[in-house]
Length: 127
Image: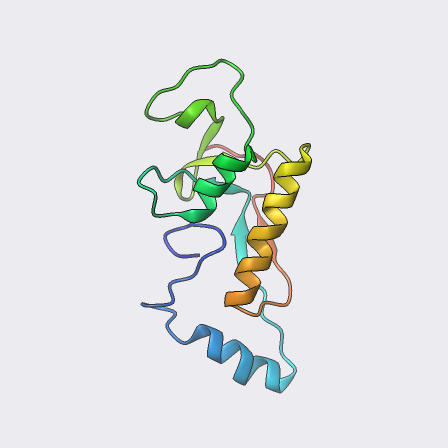
């Protein structure tokens, strides 16, 4: 994950060439690639993280239920503090959220040919 952001990797920095390595070294040698992602999707308010923006637009995140909208609770989204800092959690009880999640995984898989996922901290954790 680039900057602890799900569905990303640092393709222009530390992991430049990872996509080529996965396809032309690992896969050609019958090895698998399983990246780690977190249940908490980083809340990034500057528009630079498409997964958060599209999740917000799709109504994919658990809402706080209290209607409070302030700097740490973007548009009433329930947040926790985990690896990326403030994070939103996907509401998998909603069809739209599951469709959003599947699209994020599909799009990420088009960039980086992973073979499975390690969903770390697969609960709405907070520290």
